[in-house]
Picture 1 (cartoon, rainbow, N blue to C red):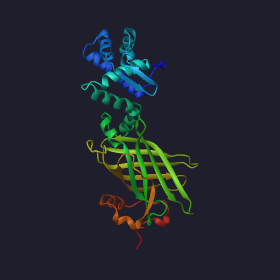
Picture 2 (picture 1 turned 90 degrees about the vertical axis):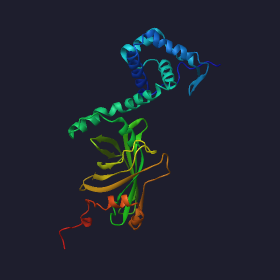
Picture 3 (picture 1 turned 60 degrees about the vertical axis):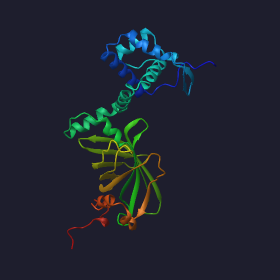
Picture 4 (picture 1 turned 30 degrees about the vertical axis):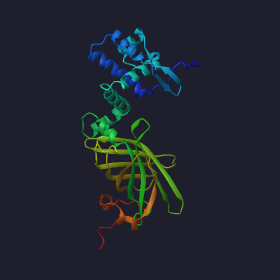
Length: 305
């Protein structure tokens, strides 16, 4: 075997922290001494199979940790050398009774950077329950978001691409629009922000990317189909979009977001209002709620005539 690198490709921080926390919890729950923990990896290291990573090929035994290293990990509850964290990670993933718990710890670890943000919003709105990691995970995915066009609301329906969960960030979100502006220019807009579950509801706060004018959007989900066991990992969503672009008056638009399968070939687009009746009934019902327009020419004038 050729010379190996000094360590495998590092685990990402969320996984390393989850592995460390799980090891410490298991040691405390089972009254494991440091020698006991070390022996787990020693037995694991007797497996002759190899581990393949982007950095090379390794024998399981190479991931064993010495006494002082394990002592430091248990006392500090912080990740240590990449080799050793890989060793514990591999051991946990091969134990049927431990693997589900590791997955839970990883999910909690990925959500950890956003917990304070979500809790602050929940407290402001009067909710004090713990953040539900399963619910946050179920929201993740790609959606086609239908709403009236803000340029030609009587003639066009915008279909935006809304995504929740960017990389390892469960609550990061993006919204991408495509439309033709008033003078005929094709425009692509992209907003990015955060999804914030609160109580039984959810909102998303986004700002525009690369605009000279300030542009912000708030999506308030009146209903979220939280089907944890759904093959798509959740369900459709509907609600109201609040939009504030530059110095123009704020506006509000009903929307319906349809969750689509993983890696679909979808792009933001505009469809003519003549296609409205061909849309599913749930989408029609949502869009029929009406809008608060930013241009006077589109005001409904309910008190006239």
